[in-house]
Image (cartoon, rainbow, N blue to C red):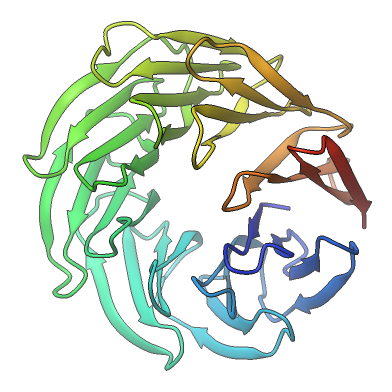
Length: 340
C-alpha cells in the first residue's frame, strides 16, 4: 500500500492506494469499503480527492491516471500521457484540473471532467519526485531527481524560473500560504528555503545525516519542519536557519510531517509504527498515537486537524499479508482501527 488521502469536503471519506493494482474508498465512521477502484495494470502509487470530494483520482505505475466518482466508484476518465510510472498527483485547489508527474521527467495537466490534456510540462532532466499547485492555483512547482525546483505557468506550460539546488535529488517540497516561499528537501539531507518571487535561495537547513522525506510550513507561527530518514524531525525558525530550534526523535526513519492547520503543532510519522504530535514552540511531545504493529507508510489529517488517518502494511518479502488503517481522534483521544 503506497498512500492514503482524506477528503477535505467529506472527511468521512478516505482512500488508499494499493500494491494490488487497486485503489479503495472507505467510510471512516463504519470502516466499510465503499468501492474498489480497479483497472490499473500495475500498482497504484498515488490517490487524492478533488476539492469538493466528488471525484477521486488514482495514479499508477502503469503510467495512467484514472478519475472516479468517489462514493460510487464509477470510472469517469482514464487519462493517458506519462511514458513511465506516475510519481504523484495533485488536484487544483478550486477546480477539476489535475496534475500528474512521472519518472519520464514530465508533468501532465488535464481537465479531469472532460478528459482533455491541457499541458505537458517539459524541462526537467530526471524523474519528477515532488510538486503540486501553489495554494492559489496560479502556479505549479516541481522538484526533480536532477537537483532542481522549477516554477511553471499552468496556462502556457512555460518555466517561469529554475532553482538549481545542487546535485542531490529533490525529494520533497512545500509552498507557504502566501505563495512567496518554497521549502525543498533533498536526498543528501539538506533543506533549502527559496523565494518564489526572486528565485533566490534564502537559506539552507543543515544537520540531517540522511535524506529529507518531508517538509512543511507552520501556518500559525513562523516555523518550518523537516523530517528525515535519519529518524529525526527538525523544527526551524524561519528567520534563523543556521541552527534548528528543536530536534525531535523517532526510533526509525521519518516518512512524513504535517503541521496542524490552526495551531503550532506538528505531526510526524515513522517506520517505528508511531505518529507523534509535537508542540513546535517548545519541542514537547503532546501525544503519541500507537497501536500499529508495523511501519507507518503514510498518514494525513482532516481539515480541522482533529482526525488523523494512518496507514501501514505487514508484509513478507514476496506477498502482502494485510493492510491496516487507523483513524485517531485528537480531541477525544480515541481510535478506530480496521484490518482488511
